[in-house]
Length: 285
Image (cartoon, rainbow, N blue to C red):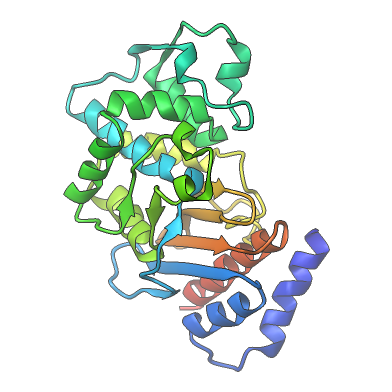
């Protein structure tokens, strides 16, 4: 897989016209995907956006855990929750067996206590579905998370259901949706205004420690690059990755990529190529 990814980026460099815009490069990559690709990229703090299908809706899959985590940490900032507060996880909170959840597997009887901090960690680092639904519950539910997102002036990110609620049909999986532009705006808000510095840095730390999707945004970036990201997957319906990349000069680059209708590992390669094209574009300036 590694050789095929490198070959793909070599082809990208070889066939793109000199001076191609970043959006043109994204379009070239997307045409190889055989599916629908949406992308939005911008330096944090700047208005200019490069991307594809910026205003089209895509299912977020587990990317919706990012606004859930932000909403929980906002309650911590407000003093309504504590990171060390213990929360009871009931068996009724468990996501189905087809959804990853280490805390469900470790405590199959349910009715155990776990801290808000640990729930956040396993949700963001490992995409634990049960942790997500418990946090969503204490955040006030899907409507409360969407209301919080709206308070950040982000319009094109919608949370309507739980992790458990997404199971059963493709229609249910469409209920938590975002546009590439909306997710980029959420990343900007995370970095600049949504949380206190301590809460923001904790969430970014957990995102940087994420064990999921190493072949996506991080796949073709230089070793050691700090990437705080959240992936999402629903088979061929959604292969996503969104995050903040720290450039060598310290600037932060927001990247949101959604791929629908293209199979893994090919879809991961296209996400990696888009992230690498953005990296090359902004590090050359």
